[in-house]
Image (tube, rainbow, N blue to C red; front, side):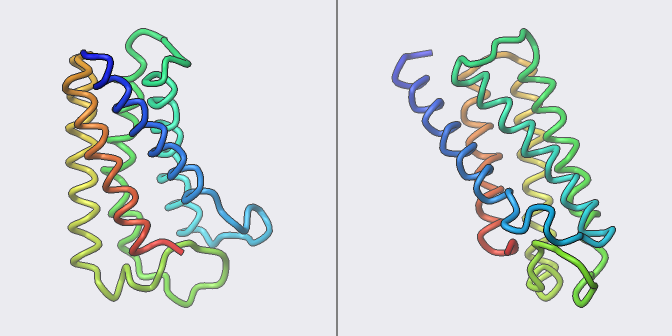
Length: 157
C-alpha cells in the first residue's frame, strides 16, 4: 500500500474513533439508570464501539496482534447483526435513561434499512479483514463506519 493511502486510512480511522468516542459516550454516565431494553441496546452497541476503537489502534500502528483486526471486525459485524432486533420494541415513554430518539419508531422503515446496511457493511468489513489486505480493509472500514455517524445523527440523542 502506498504511504499516502496508509496515511489517509489512518486519518479516517482516527476520525471514526473520535466520532465514536464522542457520540457513544453518555452525557449522563451512570447518573441515570437505564431501563432493561435501553441497557441491552447500549451493551450491544458498546461491542461495536470497543471493536472499532481497537481496530483503529491496529490501523494506527499502536497495536499489532496478528489476526486481531479480523477478530475485532467479526465482533463488530456480530454486534451489528444484533442491533436492529435490539430496537424492535417501541420503548417510547418507558421510565429511565435512553439515547434512542422517538424517530426510530416514527420512521421504522428508514431506521431498519439503515441497520440492515450497517450489518451488511460490517459483514463486508469482517470478510475484508480476513484477507489481511489493507487495500480491501480500508475502504470496507470507511464504509462501515460511515453508517455509524449517519444513524447517530438522525436517531441518537
